[in-house]
Amino acid sequence: MGNSIGILEVTGFTPAMVALDAMEKAADIEVVQAELNDFLGTVIKIGGTVDAVSAALAAGKRVAAGFGVEPIVTLLSNPEPSALRTGILSRQERSPLLDQNVVLGEPTPSPQATSETEETPMAETPSFALGFIETQGFTAVFEAIDSACKAANVEVLAKEKLGGGYITVVIKGDVAAVTAAIETGKEKVGSLGKLIAAHVIARPSANVLALLPK
Image (cartoon, rainbow, N blue to C red; front, side, top):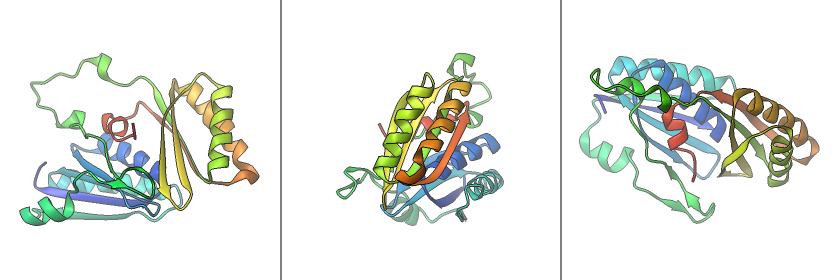
Protein backbone atom coordinates (compact mmCIF):
# COMPACT_ATOMS: atom_id res chain seq x y z
CA MET A 1 0.00 0.00 0.00
CA GLY A 2 3.00 2.30 0.31
CA ASN A 3 3.42 4.96 2.97
CA SER A 4 0.52 7.22 2.14
CA ILE A 5 -3.20 7.13 1.45
CA GLY A 6 -4.93 9.39 -1.04
CA ILE A 7 -8.63 10.24 -0.86
CA LEU A 8 -10.70 11.60 -3.73
CA GLU A 9 -14.37 12.33 -3.08
CA VAL A 10 -16.74 13.57 -5.74
CA THR A 11 -20.44 13.92 -6.42
CA GLY A 12 -21.58 11.26 -8.87
CA PHE A 13 -20.47 7.76 -9.81
CA THR A 14 -19.33 8.52 -13.36
CA PRO A 15 -16.86 11.29 -12.42
CA ALA A 16 -15.41 9.01 -9.74
CA MET A 17 -14.82 6.10 -12.13
CA VAL A 18 -13.31 8.36 -14.78
CA ALA A 19 -11.06 9.92 -12.12
CA LEU A 20 -10.04 6.45 -10.94
CA ASP A 21 -9.06 5.46 -14.47
CA ALA A 22 -6.99 8.64 -14.80
CA MET A 23 -5.29 8.09 -11.44
CA GLU A 24 -4.24 4.54 -12.28
CA LYS A 25 -2.89 5.61 -15.65
CA ALA A 26 -1.03 8.60 -14.16
CA ALA A 27 1.04 6.99 -11.39
CA ASP A 28 2.18 3.80 -9.68
CA ILE A 29 -0.60 3.46 -7.11
CA GLU A 30 -2.79 0.77 -5.61
CA VAL A 31 -6.54 1.17 -5.37
CA VAL A 32 -7.46 0.36 -1.78
CA GLN A 33 -11.21 0.85 -1.67
CA ALA A 34 -14.20 2.70 -3.09
CA GLU A 35 -17.19 3.68 -1.02
CA LEU A 36 -20.58 5.32 -1.57
CA ASN A 37 -22.10 7.66 1.00
CA ASP A 38 -25.83 7.22 0.11
CA PHE A 39 -26.13 10.90 -0.76
CA LEU A 40 -24.68 11.32 -4.25
CA GLY A 41 -21.04 10.96 -3.21
CA THR A 42 -18.36 8.45 -4.18
CA VAL A 43 -14.96 8.24 -2.51
CA ILE A 44 -11.90 6.51 -3.96
CA LYS A 45 -9.05 5.50 -1.62
CA ILE A 46 -5.61 4.85 -3.10
CA GLY A 47 -2.21 3.93 -1.67
CA GLY A 48 1.43 4.36 -2.70
CA THR A 49 4.39 6.62 -2.15
CA VAL A 50 3.73 10.26 -1.37
CA ASP A 51 4.92 11.35 -4.81
CA ALA A 52 2.87 8.74 -6.66
CA VAL A 53 -0.31 9.38 -4.68
CA SER A 54 0.12 13.14 -5.08
CA ALA A 55 0.48 12.79 -8.86
CA ALA A 56 -2.50 10.45 -9.06
CA LEU A 57 -4.73 12.75 -7.00
CA ALA A 58 -3.81 15.71 -9.20
CA ALA A 59 -4.76 13.75 -12.31
CA GLY A 60 -8.00 12.49 -10.78
CA LYS A 61 -9.03 15.93 -9.51
CA ARG A 62 -8.38 17.51 -12.90
CA VAL A 63 -10.48 14.93 -14.75
CA ALA A 64 -13.34 14.94 -12.23
CA ALA A 65 -13.52 18.75 -12.32
CA GLY A 66 -14.20 18.48 -16.04
CA PHE A 67 -17.67 17.16 -15.15
CA GLY A 68 -18.57 20.45 -13.49
CA VAL A 69 -18.30 19.11 -9.95
CA GLU A 70 -15.92 20.10 -7.15
CA PRO A 71 -13.75 17.12 -6.17
CA ILE A 72 -12.33 17.00 -2.64
CA VAL A 73 -8.87 15.44 -2.27
CA THR A 74 -6.44 14.87 0.56
CA LEU A 75 -3.21 12.96 1.10
CA LEU A 76 -2.52 11.18 4.40
CA SER A 77 1.21 10.58 4.83
CA ASN A 78 2.10 7.66 7.12
CA PRO A 79 -1.44 7.26 8.47
CA GLU A 80 -1.69 6.08 12.06
CA PRO A 81 -2.38 2.30 11.96
CA SER A 82 -5.43 2.25 14.21
CA ALA A 83 -6.97 5.21 12.37
CA LEU A 84 -6.37 3.44 9.07
CA ARG A 85 -7.68 0.08 10.27
CA THR A 86 -10.87 1.22 11.98
CA GLY A 87 -11.64 4.70 10.70
CA ILE A 88 -10.38 5.11 7.15
CA LEU A 89 -10.83 1.64 5.66
CA SER A 90 -14.36 0.28 5.77
CA ARG A 91 -15.76 -3.19 6.17
CA GLN A 92 -18.32 -4.34 3.66
CA GLU A 93 -21.62 -2.63 4.32
CA ARG A 94 -25.03 -2.78 2.68
CA SER A 95 -27.33 0.19 2.41
CA PRO A 96 -30.94 -0.70 3.29
CA LEU A 97 -32.07 2.46 1.50
CA LEU A 98 -30.40 1.58 -1.80
CA ASP A 99 -30.44 -2.22 -1.27
CA GLN A 100 -26.85 -2.55 -2.46
CA ASN A 101 -23.31 -2.65 -1.14
CA VAL A 102 -21.68 0.70 -0.43
CA VAL A 103 -18.10 -0.61 -0.25
CA LEU A 104 -17.34 -1.61 -3.80
CA GLY A 105 -15.43 -4.41 -5.46
CA GLU A 106 -12.24 -6.28 -4.78
CA PRO A 107 -9.55 -3.89 -5.99
CA THR A 108 -6.53 -5.36 -7.79
CA PRO A 109 -2.98 -3.96 -7.89
CA SER A 110 -2.47 -1.36 -10.59
CA PRO A 111 -0.47 -2.75 -13.57
CA GLN A 112 2.30 -0.23 -12.79
CA ALA A 113 2.54 -1.61 -9.26
CA THR A 114 3.51 -5.14 -10.31
CA SER A 115 7.08 -6.32 -9.80
CA GLU A 116 9.54 -5.70 -12.61
CA THR A 117 9.96 -9.46 -12.82
CA GLU A 118 6.24 -9.94 -13.46
CA GLU A 119 4.91 -9.60 -16.96
CA THR A 120 1.28 -8.88 -17.78
CA PRO A 121 0.22 -10.73 -20.94
CA MET A 122 -0.98 -8.41 -23.66
CA ALA A 123 -4.21 -10.39 -23.83
CA GLU A 124 -5.10 -9.19 -20.33
CA THR A 125 -5.11 -5.54 -21.37
CA PRO A 126 -8.69 -4.46 -22.06
CA SER A 127 -9.24 -3.72 -25.75
CA PHE A 128 -12.80 -2.51 -25.24
CA ALA A 129 -14.43 0.66 -23.93
CA LEU A 130 -16.84 1.41 -21.10
CA GLY A 131 -19.63 3.93 -21.46
CA PHE A 132 -21.37 5.67 -18.56
CA ILE A 133 -24.76 7.39 -18.60
CA GLU A 134 -25.71 8.97 -15.29
CA THR A 135 -29.08 10.65 -14.78
CA GLN A 136 -31.31 11.92 -12.04
CA GLY A 137 -34.42 9.85 -12.52
CA PHE A 138 -35.07 6.22 -13.41
CA THR A 139 -37.24 6.92 -16.46
CA ALA A 140 -34.53 8.99 -18.09
CA VAL A 141 -31.81 6.38 -17.64
CA PHE A 142 -34.07 3.55 -18.81
CA GLU A 143 -34.93 5.48 -21.97
CA ALA A 144 -31.28 6.40 -22.49
CA ILE A 145 -29.96 2.88 -22.12
CA ASP A 146 -32.65 1.36 -24.34
CA SER A 147 -31.78 3.85 -27.06
CA ALA A 148 -28.06 3.25 -26.54
CA CYS A 149 -28.40 -0.50 -26.94
CA LYS A 150 -30.53 -0.09 -30.06
CA ALA A 151 -27.99 2.29 -31.59
CA ALA A 152 -24.94 0.01 -31.39
CA ASN A 153 -23.68 -3.43 -30.45
CA VAL A 154 -23.06 -2.90 -26.74
CA GLU A 155 -23.61 -4.87 -23.54
CA VAL A 156 -25.05 -3.51 -20.29
CA LEU A 157 -22.63 -4.34 -17.46
CA ALA A 158 -24.01 -2.65 -14.37
CA LYS A 159 -26.42 -0.22 -12.76
CA GLU A 160 -25.43 1.86 -9.72
CA LYS A 161 -27.64 3.99 -7.46
CA LEU A 162 -26.29 6.84 -5.31
CA GLY A 163 -29.44 8.15 -3.67
CA GLY A 164 -31.05 11.46 -4.52
CA GLY A 165 -32.39 9.87 -7.70
CA TYR A 166 -28.90 9.46 -9.21
CA ILE A 167 -28.58 6.30 -11.32
CA THR A 168 -25.67 5.25 -13.52
CA VAL A 169 -25.77 2.57 -16.20
CA VAL A 170 -22.49 1.17 -17.55
CA ILE A 171 -22.16 -0.37 -21.01
CA LYS A 172 -19.33 -2.24 -22.74
CA GLY A 173 -18.27 -2.68 -26.35
CA ASP A 174 -15.70 -1.50 -28.86
CA VAL A 175 -14.84 2.21 -28.77
CA ALA A 176 -16.87 3.18 -31.84
CA ALA A 177 -19.96 1.28 -30.69
CA VAL A 178 -19.85 2.63 -27.14
CA THR A 179 -19.28 6.18 -28.36
CA ALA A 180 -22.26 5.96 -30.71
CA ALA A 181 -24.42 4.40 -28.01
CA ILE A 182 -23.58 7.04 -25.42
CA GLU A 183 -24.22 9.89 -27.85
CA THR A 184 -27.62 8.41 -28.74
CA GLY A 185 -28.47 7.81 -25.09
CA LYS A 186 -27.62 11.38 -24.12
CA GLU A 187 -30.05 12.74 -26.69
CA LYS A 188 -32.91 10.70 -25.22
CA VAL A 189 -32.70 12.01 -21.65
CA GLY A 190 -34.31 15.37 -22.49
CA SER A 191 -37.53 16.10 -20.65
CA LEU A 192 -37.61 12.69 -18.96
CA GLY A 193 -35.00 13.62 -16.39
CA LYS A 194 -31.68 15.34 -15.83
CA LEU A 195 -28.44 14.21 -17.46
CA ILE A 196 -25.72 14.23 -14.81
CA ALA A 197 -22.85 12.79 -16.84
CA ALA A 198 -22.04 10.79 -19.95
CA HIS A 199 -18.57 9.53 -20.72
CA VAL A 200 -16.57 6.89 -22.61
CA ILE A 201 -13.42 5.29 -21.15
CA ALA A 202 -11.30 3.59 -23.81
CA ARG A 203 -9.18 0.68 -22.51
CA PRO A 204 -10.37 1.06 -18.89
CA SER A 205 -8.00 0.29 -16.04
CA ALA A 206 -8.39 -2.98 -14.14
CA ASN A 207 -9.85 -1.37 -11.03
CA VAL A 208 -12.59 0.47 -12.86
CA LEU A 209 -13.80 -2.97 -13.92
CA ALA A 210 -13.25 -4.48 -10.46
CA LEU A 211 -15.24 -1.75 -8.71
CA LEU A 212 -18.32 -1.91 -10.91
CA PRO A 213 -21.37 -3.30 -9.11
CA LYS A 214 -22.04 -6.91 -9.94
